[in-house]
Length: 120
Image 1 (cartoon, one colour):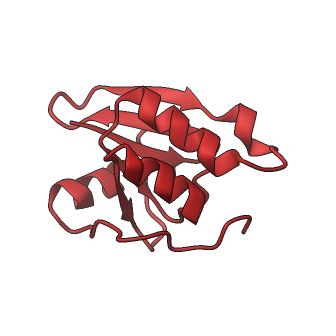
Image 2 (tube, rainbow, N blue to C red):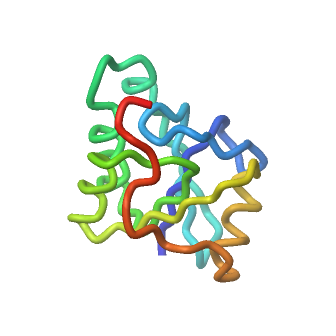
């Protein structure tokens, strides 16, 4: 299964980015092989609006079935949810590697809805 994470950097030791739509990168990890792909999110970092929706489209195109992030707004959440992509919210500062380990160990809850308002 492919799992996407919002990241501040371009490797597994990078910190999870608290922003979804305006994250610097998305790291897409294959949970079976542990191979990963880096996706730059530069088109959305300074977007005036619609960053969450565009980022959600990026995640959909990546083939990920799960998104791990700290915050996800309602529009992005709805787009992801409509495509069957689950969103796991992690509240603590952590690395990409650690967040993946927590998810695979069943320690992260799948969100029922967005955890922040849009444009935060």
